[in-house]
Image (cartoon, rainbow, N blue to C red; front, side):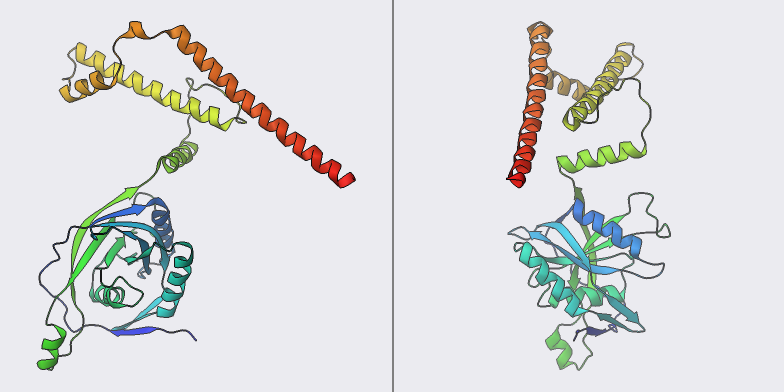
Length: 316
């Protein structure tokens, strides 16, 4: 039997109080970002999708690394919001089996508005046994204002909240209806992509916006590594060309040069051209290509030997 958490809207519409001074930086890994984008596309107009953010936290709590996310069903009606607590707990325990170091960092919403319902959901994640307690929960909003079609990078905001109003003991003494209220403060966030993911995104975007380029070196698609190498060399060639054009414009006094950029070039480039043996460089490069082709040939030979051995085994 599923369990749900029923929360009543707080009777305080606007609350002010002291803010948390703890510095927090949020890093959103690309797998979590792609999941959030998918969730944003699922949200219908006027309806928000909420869910749990998972990842790791630094020892001092100042650095959060969001690695995964999942949706938690909820229902808003009148002054109440119902959260499927059992669904949240089940998915979290399932995630912990394969990622024991991850923990709940907070929650996300596809509605960028911070309202009283936001405080209710934030209170659930801050105080729940399977929430962030004793650490503060992070709230992430993902705006989607293109009628279910993401045509540009959406705006991602992250917040940390501080409880405001009378404490529980004070509210009890004054016989007040104490409900949790929070003051949300924006905090920094950044997106993280590793080298492999950047390469994949680069090739995916080039497939969408591919144009004919006469300078591209033709190569058989059977060798993926060599094709990637050639693509990178072509990009480097374009960068060198743009740098030379920039230097020529400076020499002709068409534009003003940048001293910092000049220092960077002098520091990182080898200016003594006489020390470069072009023949030796070409010879080493050809040897490298031959070694790569030999490895591919040996790998295909081993594969053929294994397939032949498997067929002979079935005959025996």
